[in-house]
Image (cartoon, rainbow, N blue to C red; front, side, top):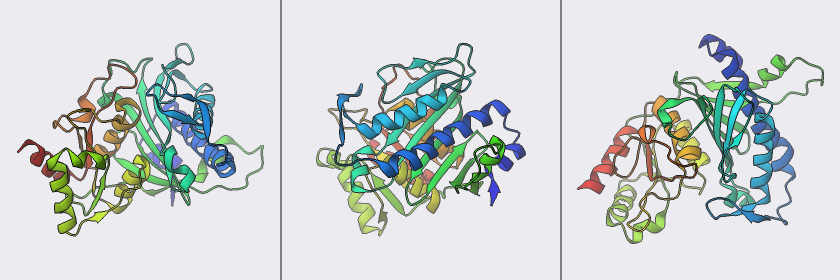
Length: 317
């Protein structure tokens, strides 16, 4: 397999952006190898809540600490995390602002299911007032039987895998990067997929279009793939080459619960670069939504183009 370094060199990705992406990959690898495998699941909850009012797990805090620690060592002007009430300043004059969900799916980690991390990268020193279309890179990591990743730098979406080697401590950093391989440098979503990952199923009780759509998928023989984790579910769509993930809102909570900045915008970038579509329940393009505050939420429908367009048509009809 081609190394990620070879891919970046062929795509003429800037050295600064390469360095940041590799640092993010190492943050994911360090968390995967040093924290996730040694976590005490008998001592689950922290004594804190995040900005959205969710009770934090100690592993959420641990993941956040790993990412923040490595980002502070990079040319990063702003660090915005789902686990922080407000973004924190990085290096003065830093080139990039980074927004991330350090551990997506933490509520299912004690059940030994795959979880992951989501990252969006912007040039500059702010994320407020920005649109997802301004991202220069987006990444998603899946922590499962192996550490896999999906990356876009605006030149398509790639899938890759981490294959750790036992290198001596004094080996050059560039050589260590060769542990990240590209398994598919052109992830492409078919226009019609056979998989569906329906989030917020409770909404089907009040939203008739949702119940009807679920029944139609089942009758059509579509395949349900839903774990309760956004990263593994969308990762499955990337690997299989098509499908739809959705998290709709309701009349009481029209914008759902997924965060625009930390989750939806990065995945929308990855999906569009793979030839898919990512829109809100109203049909607005996710990447055109302006971030007004860090923990802003949005409904989201993304994946194969025709699947997304069909379901939005049902809502509007």
